[in-house]
Picture 1 (cartoon, helix red, strand yellow):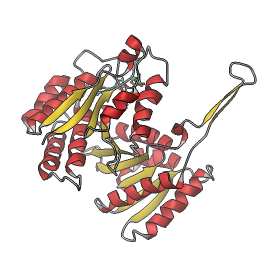
Picture 2 (cartoon, helix red, strand yellow; picture 1 turned 90 degrees about the vertical axis):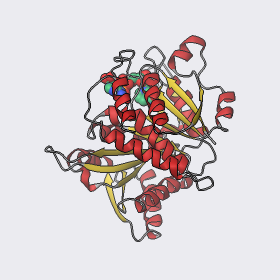
Picture 3 (cartoon, helix red, strand yellow; picture 1 turned 90 degrees about the horizontal axis):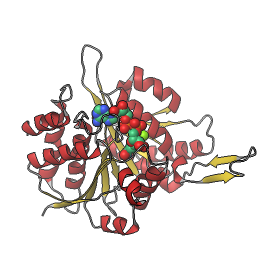
Picture 4 (tube, rainbow, N blue to C red; picture 1 turned 180 degrees about the horizontal axis):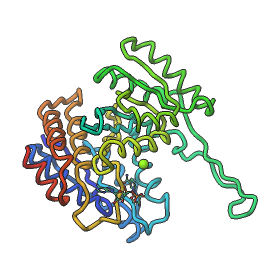
Length: 338
Ligand code: NAI
Ligand code: MG
């Protein structure tokens, strides 16, 4: 039975890179039934639609959602981010944002291979706060950080479980020395869950120090778990030290599978190169590989063939990361290796 996938090409280079992802999955022999959704900045500018509840309800019956990029410079900040991306994460409870970073060894360095788990539903992105006396000289803005034991614990647990399938090392990145309330909850939760995983070696980095290590010594990492805001920033840095934004893939997971998970490249709609067949589609293709691996790993309906197709796509991409060429040329080259 074919998986049913919702596809949001979105804006700018989004539809261009998603087309390559779909092409490559098909070349890998994966049968998908796709449902297209016209959402994003362009749609908002046309009729003010962001993400209707009816669409969200429809999505609940899908197996996964594949997104290119959404965002248009003409749309006021926050409309699409909060109304579409964050709404999707919160409503579908996509509480794990998984971002792998890999760089092969070369003359420039030893290379690295690590994954960042960003808590995806809480922290400063939860929308807590407000404006008082807006527009006056006495204006006050607050933006609180929401950290629940449940939310922190499920992210931390995911970190330990993922580390157990990799090199058994998990780092917590936070700022416990200054954020003494949220940091305390994160650190205590981390320490408690660690007791259940004696085979996982643990480490702690202040997030500012982690920025240094991401650049100077990323080999120290296997799995990193962190909060929503720190994860957002750290993963852009992770992308920058791992071959660039054109290669950075991500999964927004609901590991309990109570709703479909969402897969998208880390990059945005890149209006500066949109429509020119210039965007690197590898990030979107690797995100598609993550989607197949997650779908096939469903314990209630395991599909080894689909997991294996994801792995084949990943190695085909690995062989094309140094390639220069147009969006379609790179997509064709990856497809040809399958
Ligand atoms: P961006 O990621 O779109 O672009 C940053 C720079 O990276 C640009 O110079 C762009 O040309 C380049 N770039 C991005 N992806 C590339 C690729 N695949 N191949 C080659 N070069 C690539 O970030 P920016 O400019 O800050 O945002 C543009 C729009 O995208 C905004 O509206 C923003 O809100 C939205 N955005 C959406 C995201 C999403 O859908 N998850 C994530 C980040 C931004
Ligand atoms: Mg970001």
